Amino acid sequence: MDTIIILFCLFAALTGYIIERNIFNPITLFFTYWAGVLLLVIFGGYYGANVTSTKAYLIIFIGLISFYVGCLFYYRIDKKYKLKQGIEDKGAYDYELRYKLLYVIYGIVILFLLYNSKTIFEILKEGGSFKDVRKLYTNREEYNIVRKSPLNVVFKNFVSTPVVYLSLPVAVVDFFSGKRNKPLLYMTFTMALLWFINSGGRSVLLWLAMYFVIAMLIYRKQFKLSKKIIYIVGGLVLALTLLLLFTTSLRKGAFSLVREVFIYFAAPIPHFDYRISVINEMYPNVFGFGVSSLNGFIYPILFFLNNLGLMPYPDAYLLIRHLSFEELETVVDIGVRMNAFATMFYQLYLDGRIFGVVVGSSVFGAICNWAYVKMKSTMNQFMVVFYLVLIQKLLFSVVRFYYYQPSHAIGLVLLFFIFKKTMKPPMQLEMKGM
Image (cartoon, rainbow, N blue to C red; front, side, top):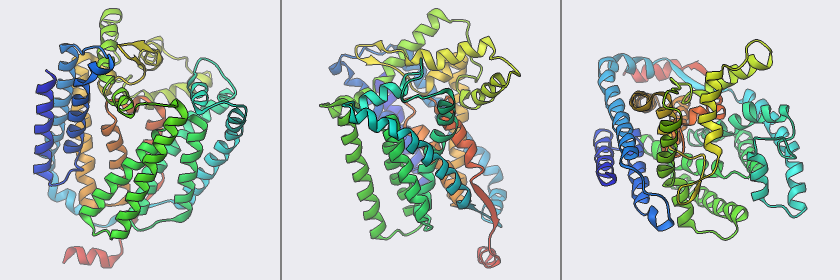
């Protein structure tokens, strides 16, 4: 079964390239990524991971086919409205960053992270490590010296983390678009560094490197980038990669890079197999109906309604949230110790079993392709950032469906407030009409 899925992924990736003539379209990126993931799974036995069942592979296959169909379906819709869209997209409007608003938001987040960093430096000074910091940061059962108070945790979940995550693609697009606003870039790198110190997490380093590479591919296709810019980006990506390896060694000591890659990019497949078997056996009649996949948008609303005394959490919601989040955080033995990462199809499966995987994957595929086509036709900053945000979800889809996390959902909402729509200069409009 795994070989059949890999061949399908390669076929899909090739068709995406033939249609778009680039490698940054969502079809080619997504299916090249999954072909690589499944090739890694084949070598899983070397590390002792359990063999993935045919049923789990079949569900993943259905999800991949559905995503492909969703992408192709958007092309069919787009043909009907292409002329109208071209006039609207390339016509009178552009988007600009609200720099002053971002300075205020970033400044508040930096002050918050600096305040929390004092505790981290005390831990390190007393002989602790970033591994200890990570354990304290991810311990959601109680407050501690890192998770200082309810208010501190709320600000982290609903403000600082969403802002840090969104700031990465915003800074990258600002760099490639030619703006290169120095305060914005300096504040972004400061936040990313402080976020790592506070959390011990390495994801921002990996995402930032990915954003630079994908953005360079996008802008290089549309505009002629100088060799200087390409060398700068190559140097930044190399520096971020080395920093990622260094921070990994700080957290884990001696480690095998190949095994780390397997654990983070392949072990989620047998972990997905284990988790859906638990759902089928213990919760056969429990369905999320979209609540699991879109929990990131739902939870902040319910949180404030509950804490304002207006409405308690519904019992059905608490069960879905438990299965979507707390249950996944429990470490299990699947031949290797694993938790959290269970692929994007886990949340979709919990929402509606096979039907949820089909609907969720196809809709997500259509949205990703819509964002890509819109970005390619306009090349405005807003759409490039929006597309990069979605690409992060695609290239880490073996981890989870990210919009079950409030940090990513709030970041997406915030994106619509940090840009302002502006009229293009009349001369630009005349040139486009020539």
